[in-house]
Image (tube, rainbow, N blue to C red; front, side, top):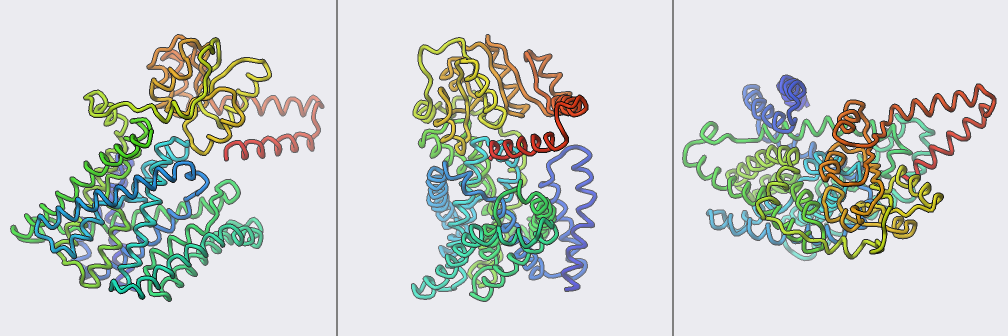
Length: 564
């Protein structure tokens, strides 16, 4: 225990200055955490802390990160893209995994070890991919949803791999037993989520501390059950995350508390990856360094270039627009933490040599650093590929799912079918004004089809969706999406119709107005005006305090339902 605390202390002491630099110069934190881990590795060696302890720390850190990812999974939010994501995830595993296996054998890796090399190439990181895409996921952009569901599907495949690996044999009897244990944990998690989690909330009686304690107890219970069954604790941790009901509104305090815990273990994860890196030509000799670099370089090439290309091709073939497909695929350009769990367990079981393990760790560190930059500049990457003619347009999905009359004119185009979009549609229908809704969130598809007269399911960042919405004949465009990138993109189209936008920041609102927007809705200004109006009505005797409170509760409940 003392050595474990020493290792963690060294890592965070070293990480401090790196994080200050990242914050000061607005740099991605992932590369600096990995770099800090590499530096901390020298400190661990100086204190005599061996690799076995670092591997153990990595196992627990990854398991807890997998738990955090499981907590954030909302099946209802990905159910509309789950078929496409399953196909993309399966194709990644089969095609990229086979290429990784073949490349490993070509580079002299024994076939048994080349299987793990292929797994590292095929599986993508839920933590890196979804963390970098959190804004897109929170704002319901389709490529964020696709990316998350692809990671979820891959994790299920990875869990199957981990379960089989934990047996140590391919004998059908033991394999079927551990798979049964794993499925039992996942089924138990779903049952707890549906039938018992609400009871935990009621017993906690609105106490955030008790809710966090209850969820930590669930984690301990599932991890303990996994260890008792003789399977990886990562499987138990993932199941525990699924057992937590994804409702950040109802359990706001709980999710805030878990977010802090997740941030701690995210840092531990990247620091540990850096500490496990064996630097070529520094820690090992020339011959070993060349071998490791060849293996790691091949793995990086497959992960950063080949895998996103295959994913893009699959999603385009399923009818998604090239932009959504490309941005979703760029979230898969890193080695998965599940692949690292597999590699660590294989190393411990003697199924993987130190040389191949070091190459996988080195490639993981490199791809996670690269991924932080590709996500930051994903839009530029897409535009560059599009300008060079690498990507071909595909509008099949838009044509299939949209419904706009050919004779429509003088209409309102509303971007987004969230709370603000619904209110605008109600106003249009009250005024008998024609409108078209542009939406790309699959979770809203059924509601849009049922409740809206005219609609386009497409990417507002691409021109084709606007052509379907008959923008040349539109009277006004109203964007309800609080995204600076979306707002600036709409202004760049130079439509004849007036454009009203939404911004959360006053400075951005002023910039959008100067760039040509007719009006920019700014949340703080509107909230202040609404507060003044309500207080005035209370002081003038139009409302009693009880009526004001009831009205506010009704409004909050209405917003909660429309946002879900």
